[in-house]
Length: 187
Image (cartoon, rainbow, N blue to C red; front, top):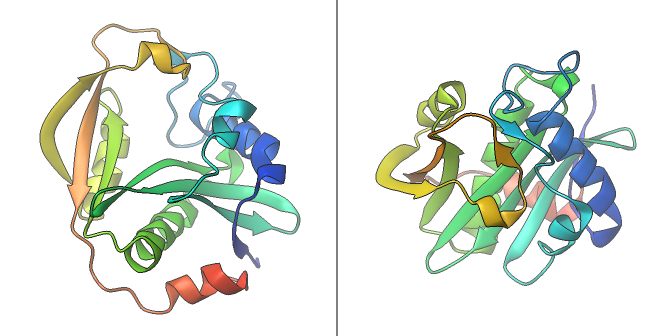
């Protein structure tokens, strides 16, 4: 299977929102190995929220198969670090290494284009499988815990006690990944 890695544009907003919602809040028959549909109700993101990600120091990376977006991740630069979020893989293509690959591309992009010296992200406290996924990739809990962002328009908790856990990772040098992002060539 051949994939193309590219940087998203505003014309991709609807397809990104659809992918993210299918990955995070799928129907029971479509659910992949990890999702939060049993924890959070409603959309994870809408088109206007995706469009708000297109600004300076903020990039959405896409992995495409043929003309379809099959994975995405958001990378936003900040003071010496980068926030990585919205990592999503099409439910039917999960458990094939695409999420790991997109995370590596996001880290490489953050290091080379945003000069990040640390990567940051948040994970729902009620998703131990996802927390373990990131910890296996070198992310560590910072001890920071935040309330679920009810006012952010990213859904409503179905169960009580959901919080956001913060994770960080110090980057290591990666070879040749950013060239793929700049040239839009195959992954």
